[in-house]
Length: 84
Image (cartoon, rainbow, N blue to C red):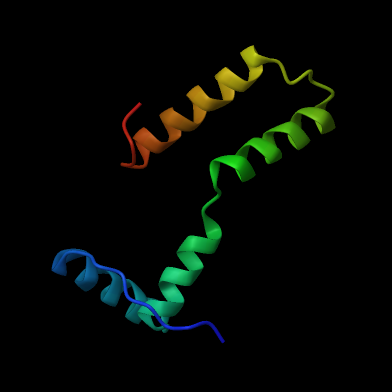
């Protein structure tokens, strides 16, 4: 088992995590672990884009890469994340 640690956050975020965890019937730790494992790193996202382009028979050019990055920025903006 991993060594426990703590994460500093605002009380508002802690309270929201507590509600989300309760609604799902898990602990805050389990919720945070699930959220973290679900999110892709930039490197993982890039690897998946390469694999998807290969499967679709698309050359993964800088232009295709930029179009994909622009699409992710728009998606995040609509989800309330980092603005595009």
